[in-house]
Image (cartoon, rainbow, N blue to C red; front, top):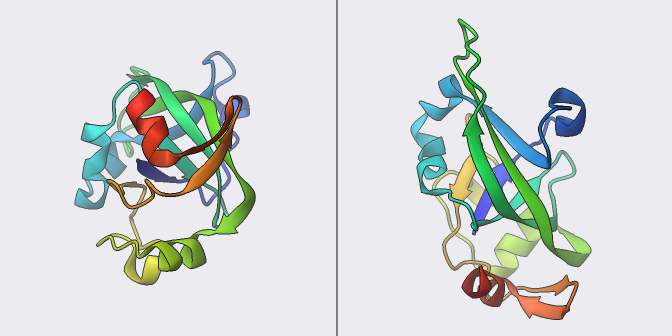
Length: 149
């Protein structure tokens, strides 16, 4: 399960109107930061949670596509986008730091379960597998959703 930071609340539907279901974007320059190395582990079918400025955990997506846009900004390099569909919701949504503390999540890019500078992507492994979420077919755990992907 991957955690993606969109704390600047980029509206991907407005930024990429010709791309469908974009939930996250990142520049080639940001991918050079070792804190974002987990990008290379993402694949179609991966389960991700995009965290916005509220720092709440609420919506989980199944990745449907990862692609480079072929653009090239001299400062940031190529833009890469991640598309996905909603797989589950945490109801009610929960403050990331409090939830991660409760579940004992530890990650080097999330000191004290807060975002660190330069962080955009983290592989949380099995840390949230026991978390129960609501899906279209009823309650399931994150671990079950990962197995079904």
